[in-house]
Amino acid sequence: MAKKSLIEKEKKKRKLVEKYDITRQSLKRRIKSSLAIQDKLTISRRLQSPPRNSAPVRLHNRCSLTGRPRSNYRDFGLPRHVPREAAHTCVLPGVLKSSW
Image (tube, rainbow, N blue to C red; front, side, top):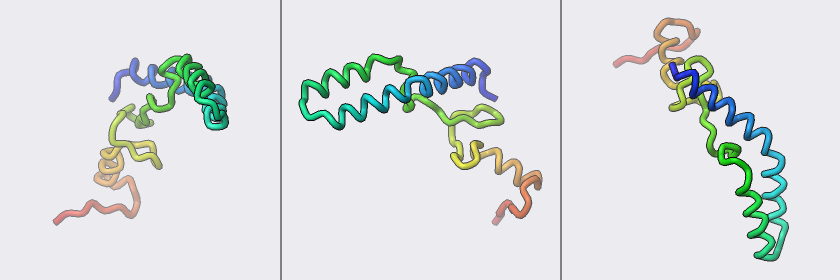
């Protein structure tokens, strides 16, 4: 189980990303549409002005059950060991653990 403080910090980052998403997208569109290099530089400086944690690159996909930040399946929102444990306890119908 991940620490509660890390999970809360991740929630804060998600809120920041949502808050600054529209401004980031509009600035990126303006960079693409402008032709002058000087304009692109000034717009890119304005793109650097929001907080660093408002960048979507800084987000982690965490497990919805345990809060684990690594080895997550995007489709399920679970790390690799949770479906494996569920298959071992016969919770998932039709899934067999292979052994050789």
